[in-house]
Length: 125
Image (cartoon, rainbow, N blue to C red; front, side, top):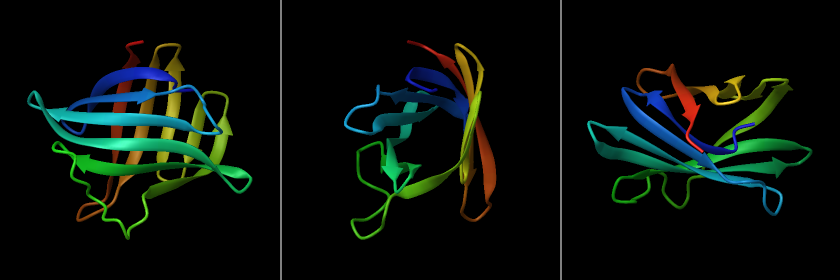
């Protein structure tokens, strides 16, 4: 659903997500968040089989590639909840196709002030 390269607003700046074609049973990707023309952080992403289902997993990195999660902490993981014709729902993350070159991604962000963040993407390739 989301293969290729996507760009759009989110978290008060610009975001880029890039996903590879499936390889060796998984999809890999990366995310870049910029604010005021500078990289704020990165994510390394994988969509992988877990049992008879899927999980969307990621790790965060600062602009200098130092990790947010230490070696003992598991990556952030969102279990598959449902698949619809134009949407895939993970627990805490939803990707919805709005057309051949547009997707919206909603992500639950936990922390001091938990909220949902919207990323509105347009395909760049």
